[in-house]
Amino acid sequence: MSERRLFGTDGVRGTANVHPMTAEMALSLGQAIARVFRADGTRKRRIIIGKDTRLSGYLFEDALAAGICSMGVDVIQVGPMPTPGMAFLTADMRCQAGVMISASHNPYHDNGIKFFSSDGYKLPDAIERHIEALIASGDLSGLRAPPDEIGRAHRIEDVAGRYVVFLKKTFPIDLSLDGVRVVLDCANGASYKVGPTVLEELGAEVFRLGVSPNGRNINEGCGSLFPEKVAEKVKEVRADVGIALDGDADRVVMIDEKGSILDGDQLLALCARDMVERGVLRGGQVVATVMSNLGLEEALEELGVGLLRTQVGDRYVVDAMREGGFNLGGEQSGHVIFLDHNTSGDGLITALQVLAYMQRKQSTLSELTTDFVRYPQVLVNVRVAEKKPIEDLPEFARSLEKVENALGGRGRVLIRNSGTEPMVRVMVEGDDEKKIREYANDLADALRRALGG
Image (tube, rainbow, N blue to C red; front, side, top):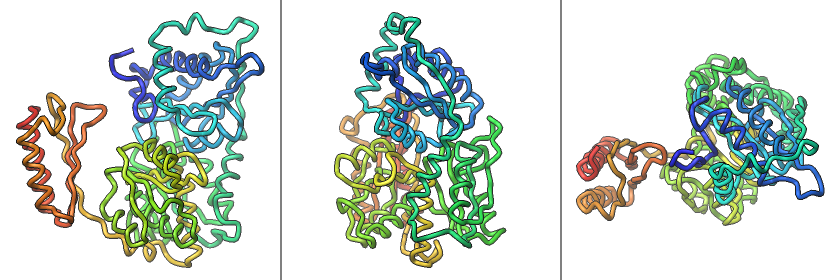
């Protein structure tokens, strides 16, 4: 293993066939996860494996299965399946763990491996550290199962139907999508089958984009990273709404009937209003990250709802939701989590909740989002030679204080270190885009002087 921690904020990720995303590492990860959840002698245990549509998924799927079986644990392989679908299936099929092979919104040459516990939640940090320790120790080869206890692997082709039924149950039984015209972009990813199926079975007329994966075109000029294509199609076919998912369908960007693009902050505000009106929002707060727009905070204040911010990463949002007993949270990028329905961000569930609200109110999506006022945000990435705490940089601290005083209560500054690069990210938000751009550039220059780059 390299000196860097193997697990990031969302599993193990990197370029396919380059450390750590190699077949050898996948086999070791399979062995380690199986060892952690291995049978206690009373019964066999099962681990379920799913993937998105990347070419390298075949390589990692079989390597993981081999590692798991070598430790005496059975494997269920289900093929392409959205990440939130795997969270659901892990719990629904009573598996001891789940594995998802995906690099989410990244291009096809990247891939990743993430794990779920038996309850469908991502693994706690302690178990990830245990897995890393097992791999680093070199002891896994001595822990393999004897020949008569090697696990079996088998593929189940029809589990997508389970997930489709689950998704449909999150949509109110007294509503339908009859007559609703939807443009759906599945990013040539894991939702290319289940996405259209769910919407069509609920009655929608679906115009499909990004449903022809070839192993290399996942997220390529399509999906939530390129919602402009959906916006164009919405206007072309006069659809009521557009839905743009990413490659593993855990995030969504939506487009109203006029072609305006709605990100996760706007969807959170919309869904919070719906849940307040129905009396089902728990805890009086919505959980989001430090990157969420001040417009979300103000929209929630109008509802009498607070905003609890976490560090960037949907797993931190989920952790805060579970700890505080909240049932709505998400990220600006389009991860929206409804803990009453699933254990992770689910782009299709989010879209269904928005569609249900539109049907209940008999309103267009643009009418439901007119109250959201977005503050301009400027983000500058500063490459640095060394990362230091702000308190160790007195000159920069004075520059920061000056900008914060200038913004007053009509903006904010966020300084955070990149977790993967020698970068410090400077984000300034306020109601005057010209001024905040100046502030962001001034702070970036001050950081470069203080830290070198």
